[in-house]
Length: 175
Image (cartoon, rainbow, N blue to C red; front, side, top):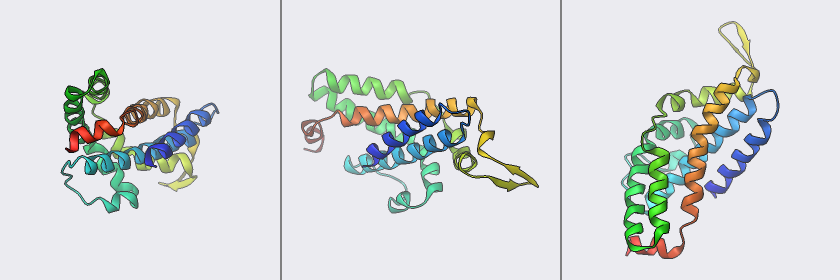
């Protein structure tokens, strides 16, 4: 469910980005990233990856998704190892998935983006009064939007690849 919701939000963001105002589109991308975080947390639990935090709050507190998003590269490395194990038991599909995940997250450091994500999401959604001046969604630049699309696109593509695994792929690991 999280993956499907993330994909829907991502697609809506792409449609919304066709307008002059990139704020709403950027906020939708950040919401999609939050859904991807939940997806990867659930996958981690399924595969028995030890997480150093309580899982339930991830589903109700936005800021926790951003905190965990910064930490996700380690989880994705663990998932890559798991998919690497699967690839040795399966055909080229597992090998291709492992290479794909490593190419997406191998050297990326999105820490700053995650630190700013909640403020950027809110700026894209609301007119606000801050430091004695009004702020509004049109302050999100095309460059900000493009950076978000690149980062969130990696998460979306990785969840799409995970969906391509079938039940036999999962059973091979958990046996």
